Image (cartoon, rainbow, N blue to C red; front, side, top):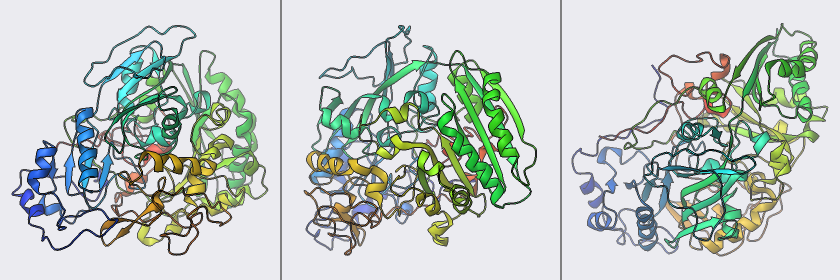
Length: 619
């Protein structure tokens, strides 16, 4: 049986008098200027005020008072419900946090106080044979059953879906029309949340671009409580910022429209390379693999470094895709890798799948069914470090040693590789606010394992990779929460413009996460979020060289904003189960990597953050 992934469980709210628990908090303080109200402040809304404004809102149970959860939880079903939640938080000066599928490895989807908005129930999917942006936006899909369309040759198809729609549900719906989209490599991850809003690397991003590159339209509730349409002609500045600026930066996205593509035939080559030792030769073989990436046009995949071994899982897609062609392309590379001292014979296996969905389900496992009326659950923070690497790093003579130094030597330690950049990702320069480092990268590497923050973040440290080509950056959704150069590392040269947009659309910081755009405008003070005095200013990027940008010293203890870690977030719930970091690639595609009760097994980053639909019924 799988052990629980997180430290806590939501329990029945029918247990006695949770309202009284919150209501009885001693009213003993005045909310400090510039700070959010917390329970016990004279300005804190009474239970009657909460329930009148947000019907169905659920107060935190008395037994969960020390769990780190917000005081109240609200699960909206309509756009108006989300508007009511945003207006309530703003008008009552209450902290607002948002939860969707729960797959935020940095823990930004839960706070220790205020209102928790669970948008996992925002559903509906509609497929369109074509898309044209309008000022009014696409018709809402809320509550609509899945339709089918006949794709039109040379016409861009699209799909509109509620923000709580999972990747698996989107795959299932699109497959009925012979289509697929740039969803996550994990069926439970929602397709319209932080994944889409930060970048979103998909299995076939090298062919079609990142998820954010394929976004066509958003419907969102902004800080003033308004429903906004953001597309190429309606609020184009907001549209630019939403495609890369990160989750909960400009508002709560309630629906999204993305491109859909004809489903391809998939050909897969899996291989294992083991060494007699964990010495440099196995990492020299790995460096050989990375140096081949720029020449592998049309190939995508995932690979893992372990102490003394490398696992590869690569694939091609399209009508001309074939196992024979894929094997022929890899044969010279695998021979070179095999030639390093101490290498054991490479084990290979191949598969072919008629559609993207058939490959996805075989590769990552069908998603366990969940209760759509249940509650999403945060997966917990997963300690890690990551970096994006491009051709300049591949040319470095120190690449093999850097890979060795970055591979974590802890229980279940893995340096996970994602060959999902280059190709169309590289060609989409300047189209949106995605970290420009993605446009120079070929691969995304993550150091992860069963370690714990309490043992020191040095367990997961890819500084050796960062030193190869300083300034490349990292993917903000899968990175270290204590990244010192977070502005430049996560958003690069786009940060200053994103900061300006954030200040324009959310001048008082109704939406705050850290690390996130303008995160340094606020900080934690004795359990409450307070302004650092930077609100209303544009936070520049100090860069990796340590120079601060505009307003760079305020609220950061005298450290330059460009090199200081983002303000600490108060969610400290760590994913406790070591299995959350295990490698589901230990079996080849199409073979069960885990016991049968473990659904949604996956490779890439999917082996982390849970393999099940984490929606659970409360009560």
